Amino acid sequence: MRVISNTAIALDGRIATAQYDHVALGTPLDRAYMSVLRARSDAVLVGGRTFRNWPLPLVPDAAALQLLEEHNFPDGEAPPIEGRRWFNAIVTRTGELPMHGRFWSDPRVMPLVYSPGTLLVPGAVPGVSEPAAIAADLARRGVQQLLLECGGNLLSQWLAAGLVDDVYFTLCPLVLGGTGAPSLVDGPGFSWASAPRLELRHAHHVGNELFCRYSVRRS
Ligand SMILES: NC(=O)c1ccc[n+]([C@@H]2O[C@H](COP(=O)([O-])OP(=O)(O)OC[C@H]3O[C@@H](n4cnc5c(N)ncnc54)[C@H](OP(=O)(O)O)[C@@H]3O)[C@@H](O)[C@H]2O)c1
Image 1 (tube, rainbow, N blue to C red):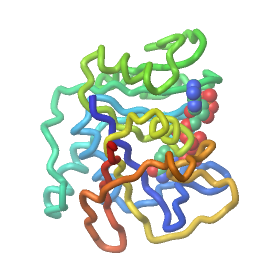
Image 2: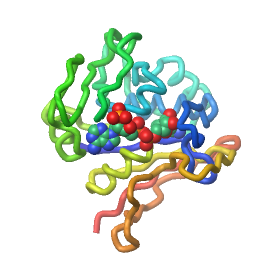
Image 3: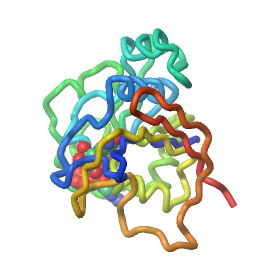
């Protein structure tokens, strides 16, 4: 199973303000490109905090795909999405998830909730919350590509586990600052020797944004 991540980042690497609120850092084109990566994937994963900020289906939007096609957007091709369904995975310790809303009833969404304990929610997978165990569970379900749309806390865990193949990000033309504000990769950090090294696969400049794809080097 391939694992890719996608994040909108400010010039200083921050992905939200120090209040950890939900903000759309990118333009509509950035959000449309997110639909391309979703369409190429079988599952999308976020953490509980990100889900609480945006408890909506994590599926591609047909109008967004059309918009990119019309703009001849670089790397904008996506496979057909009609009739498809996506695993939408949430990783949570607290189990504090908003249960109202269309996430839980959207026919395109197959919810999965990974947690160390037992939760009484649709799609609960008790006792599974570490990246390797989640990856094994998703692979067993037939997932060939997983898209991580989580914050830096979870992304650091997936990188530390050596499970991330490609890091996509959109560099957005603003700075957020704020000590403790979430960034592309948070967590305890890496030593210099263990820090993942990456190779640039593409960098497309569209308007004031830079759309980048880096692959994690395997040594
Ligand atoms: N700019 C972007 O593209 C982008 C993308 C994603 C997120 N964000 C923003 O980034 C901020 C959130 O960042 P974050 O790093 O806290 O993101 P996150 O994706 O919500 O990951 C953190 C959450 O994951 C759960 N978690 C982490 N490790 C776990 C483990 N080992 N076992 C079980 N559950 C675990 C916890 O959920 P519980 O609290 O439920 O226990 C934790 O609060 C928000 O402001 C969000 O809106 C921005």
